[in-house]
Structure formats: structure tokens, C-alpha cells
Image (cartoon, rainbow, N blue to C red; front, side, top):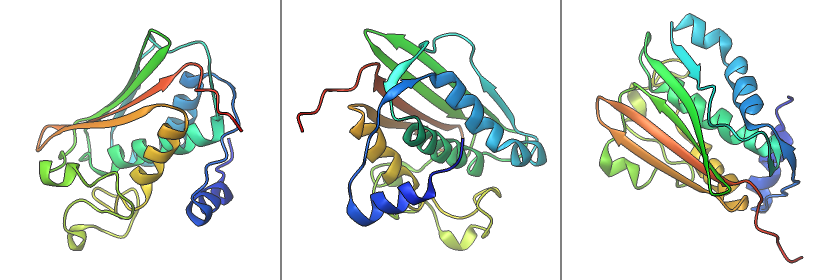
Amino acid sequence: GSHPLSKIFDIIASGQLDVRTGPVALRNVAQSVVASYEQVIRQRSLSVTIASEGWPATLMADEALLELAFSNVLGNAIKYTPDGGSITLAAETRDSVVRVTIQDTGIGIDPADQIHIFERFYTAGDTQLHSTSKAAFRGGGLGLGLALVSRIVRAHGGELSCDSELGKGTTMSISLPLEPPSRSS
């Protein structure tokens, strides 16, 4: 799909998330996000796998926002995984909640940094070591990414968590209800 950049700026400017729900095939979202990184995945000899089982047929969500969230999380996984590493996207659906995990064999996140990674504009590690390229190994910064992901997931009534071990890799978990909480207007 098209990347709704204007949506990002609206969110940042107003602090408001305009969630428009419809039926979303989550595995298709994962596939299209992986496809959007195809070039860098090839360049860096990364192996990216999308598990075939566990994905719900559909869930009620805002497809554009979920695509944005997945794109951010996968982008980080790519950025912090050395060439030749692997990234796995998997899903588990249970009790009307789907839990998507994005697991990488990257450099991991220091426990001291893990507390802050969901805050706005926070970048883990010394930015001096980072190249300017967004996709290069440790390129760019986490920046707005995870703060935005966290807001998107929360707006869907879900949860975002991170489990990371230095030198071993990171697993980001996104839990989403199949039906979002009904909001009284």
C-alpha cells in the first residue's frame, strides 16, 4: 500500500490517532511490509521469514496504521541486525488476541536503553557510531519509530513489548485484539 506519510505528520502535530477500522488480513500486511524492504534485505543477505501458521484470517483494525507500525518495527530489526542475520515474523492467535513477534538475531538493546525505547525521539546507543543511511547496519536512529508504534498499538487496544538480550537479538511483540475496544464518541 501507499505509505501514509501525511498521517504520521498529523499524529505528531495533533497527538491524535485517527483510527479507521476495517477487516485486515494481518499476514498480508506483514508480507507487503517485508516486500517494501526487499532491496535492503537482499543487499545485506538477511533472511526474513514469515511464519505460515498462527495468523488470524482477519482482524478489525486500521490497515494503514498497522502497516506503518510493522514497517517501523521491521525497519529497526533490519537496522540492528548484522549482514547475514535472520528476522522471523510469527503470529499466535488465542482468546481473540493475536500476538505478532518480530524476532531478530541482531545486536540486542542494552537493558538500560530498553526502558526508554518507546519514548519519543529516543535513540539507543551512541549516534556517532551510526551511519546516516536509514537501512545500513545501525544506520539512522530509532527516532520517532517506536513511540509511534506504541501509540498505534495502544490506539487499537493492544500492547507492545520488547525482549532483548545484548549480542543475541531482540524480539518485539505486538498484541492486538481481533476486535478493537468500542470507543464511545
